[in-house]
Image (tube, one colour):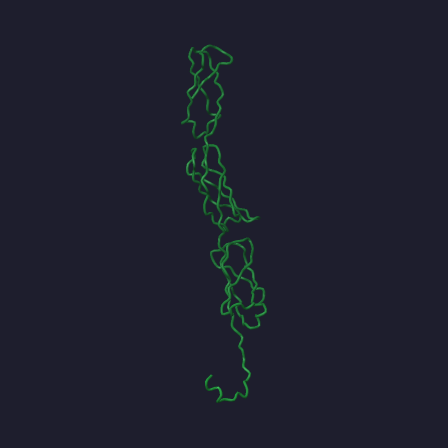
Length: 220
């Protein structure tokens, strides 16, 4: 400084650099079928080389924080500069998102439909029961409910719409005793879904009312 020439520095006494208190919190994570955990340090100096290891006591999702067991204390080349006394840590494991899709299928009278899930971790048992918003043919919305041993670890975000196509039916030709009419009665029971029997009919007629072993029938 401007007055430095007025002074003579004879010595500088030794001084202490005190150890720094370090804090840490366990980080919330999304379910991954593992007990690994990461930490966020507090009161540390930026870029210092310090680390901490530990594991969750459970791998599953919980509505309350899960205890973390530490594997020793802080380590790393800068660890001796810190005092870390925390012994109890906990954090949440949150649900992993999954979505579903369905294969196009022909009408079968039912609203239930199989759902294929994406994002399920290998080894986990999770299924989805799908329900159509309408059983009839057309583009249908699907709702789903998860089930299985690990279902509680997942959040079903959506199930894509699915196309339900018309069912193709083939009717067997009826047999009747000659009555001088062309009217033919077709039994739809074997080919029409039970729920539709009272609502589906077919008008059929023989081409000729004469006795024949191979009489043609037309219907609509």
